[in-house]
Amino acid sequence: MQPIGEFNDLQEKQIELTKEYLKIYFQLETKILPIISNEIFPKNVRRISKNEQEQILAGYVLDSVLIKRKPKDAAVLMGITEKDLFPKPEWNYVFGLASYQNGVGVTSMYRFADGNLSESNFNQSLERLIKISSHEISHMFGISHCLNANCVMNGTNSLSETDVHFARACSLCQYKLNSSLKYDDKKRLLELKKFFEANSFNAELSRTEKDLNLIQ
Ligand SMILES: [Zn+2]
Ligand SMILES: [Zn+2]
Figure 1 (cartoon, helix red, strand yellow):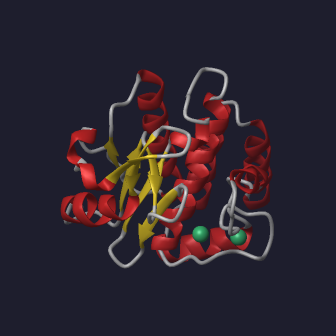
Figure 2: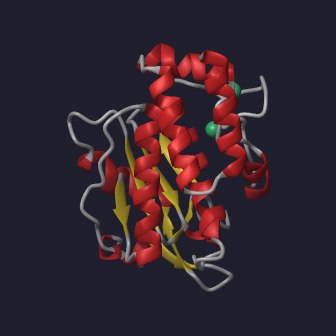
């Protein structure tokens, strides 16, 4: 993961928890690279939106920041910004952008907390961040959109859709993920259970417990 921006304590905590989650979800070593300041963005890739917050051109983050910083031994480099992103001049905003070919993606935390992360919206924002980052990284491992069941791999057009979708991958998508990454299902589910317990994701916790019961 590559954080880019000026993060406050809550935002840093959210990045740390997302790292923990992704490590469990994919059963792969997950690291946070040293934070890069917003100063890396030149004037011509910044703009002020209608709502008066600054936005960054998402493609620039992929092409000029992430690709060249991707460690040689990394499968994926996921950038995280606290600034809002836009994909092209005629668009209002975008939650994130990815290049599956290069194994890089960027996600903005900005809209997950309506631009103001606090104790009261922390969990909802974290839930959105772990769903969207695990969804995007799964694409990089070749898993496409899911029409099978309520699943983290369902395609989504809005945050309200993201909120309805489970963080859990359905059984078919779990099978696909495991056939490309070859992890211990039980170990993964036990670790997910612990994560959901510690962060009070109660619905996800009960789904993970059901999965565990099925394989035991
Ligand atoms: Zn997708
Ligand atoms: Zn699925």
